[in-house]
Image (tube, rainbow, N blue to C red):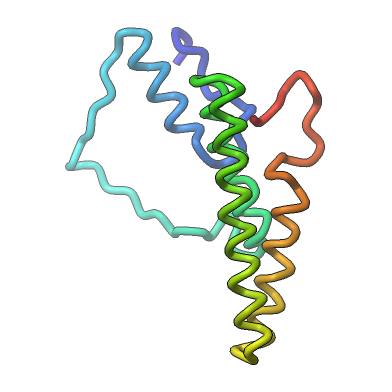
Length: 133
C-alpha cells in the first residue's frame, strides 16, 4: 500500500477499488482472486436512503476515474454521454407520468433525474484542484 500510495481519497465510495488495483498492477504487483475468501455485501446499505446522491456519486466517480487515466477529453465525452442518458430517462419518466402510470413513483424519479441533470454530474463542494471529472 505504501508503494502505490494507498487509497485515493478523491474517490467517494465508488471506483476507488478500480483505481487501487490499477496502481497495484502498474507498480508491478499482481492482483489476484481468492475464491476461498467470503465477503457478505449488503448491496446499497450505505446509501439506500439517498438514491439520487448514490447515482451522482457513482457516476461522478466513473468520470473521475476516466479523467485520471484517460484525460479530460475522454472524461468530458463520458459526462456528456451519461447526461444524455439521464435526459432520455427523464423524458421516459415524464411520458409515463403524463399517461398516468404510477404517478407518485414517476414524480419521484423525475425529481431525482432532474437533480442529476442540474448537477452536471459534478460532486458539490469540490475544490478546483481536486476535480472529479
